[in-house]
Length: 265
Image (cartoon, rainbow, N blue to C red; front, side):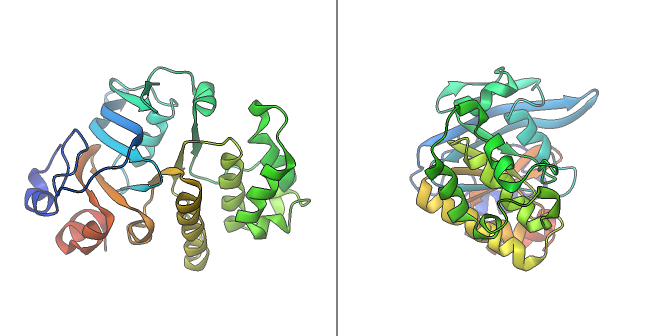
C-alpha cells in the first residue's frame, strides 16, 4: 500500500489492502470488472497520480475519496483514456485497455459520467438519452422505458429541452444516458456537486438500487465522503495522488482518526 506513513496505524488497523487488492481481513472478494494496477499520471512536471492500484467488483460500489487535489478526477480520466498514464495499466473484464482509444471504451463496457452534468441543452430529454445509445444502432423502446423507470422525474419531462431541467434532474439524465450504453462499469465523478442534500440522497439511493438490481459495477469519485460511504461497499482514500488506505466502507466511516485526517468529517 502506498503512502501509509502519515496514517499507518489507521491503515493497518482498518484491515487495509495491499497492491494486489486482496483484503487482509479474510473477506472473499467478488470478481473484478475493473482493475487498476500501478497507475501513474502527470500534467507536465506535476505528478497527479502515483502508483495507484484498486479494483471495482461486480455488483459493488467502490468510492474514491479525498480532499480537493487528491487526484480523484484525474484517476477517472486516466482510467477512461482521457489522460494517458505514465505508468501502470487498466484492465476491463481482464482485457488491457490502457492504450485503447477513448471512443472504444464505451463499446468495451465502460461509461464515464464526468463532473458537471454535461447534458446537451438544446436537445430534449428523450434526445439526450438517445445520444447514449448511438453506437449501438437501433435500440428497443423497452430499454428507454427501463431507464425512465429508474428516473421517474425525467420520464415526466421527456419532451422538454434539457436546459429546463433542475441540477438534480440533469444529473439523473446523464446517468440514464450512460446506462443506455449497457456498461459493465460506470465511472461517476462528483454526482453530488452543487445539489441539495435531499436530491443527493435520492441520486445515491438510485445508484445503490442499480448496483443491487442490475449487477452494475460503479467507481464513484465523491467529495461528500459521508454520503458516498453510506452507499458504497468499499472505500479508497487518495492523498496527493497516492492510495492511503482501501477498506470496507463501513469500517472507513467508523474510523474517526482517518476521517478527520483525510475526509473532513
